[in-house]
Amino acid sequence: MAMAINYVSDINTSKESWKIIVRVTHLWHVPSYNNPSEFQSIELVLMDEKGDKTKHQLRDR
Image 1 (cartoon, rainbow, N blue to C red):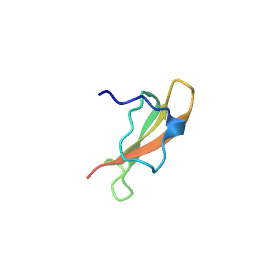
Image 2 (image 1 turned 90 degrees about the vertical axis):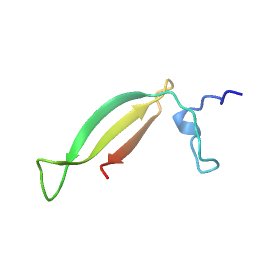
Image 3 (image 1 turned 90 degrees about the horizontal axis):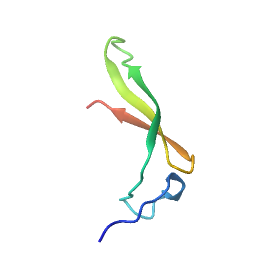
Image 4 (image 1 turned 135 degrees about the vertical axis):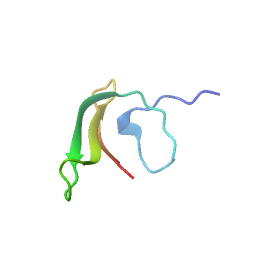
């Protein structure tokens, strides 16, 4: 059975898995504080088809 597609505005803490379709509208690298030539993380803004947006951070391990 396929999961229903949710919008960004539907996301909450009621469950752990969500199926969303989004577009990356902005993406940038955040330099490391100790070494500006290295990246600490990537940050991005995602937008669904209704225009709702959410910001996320992907950290380097």
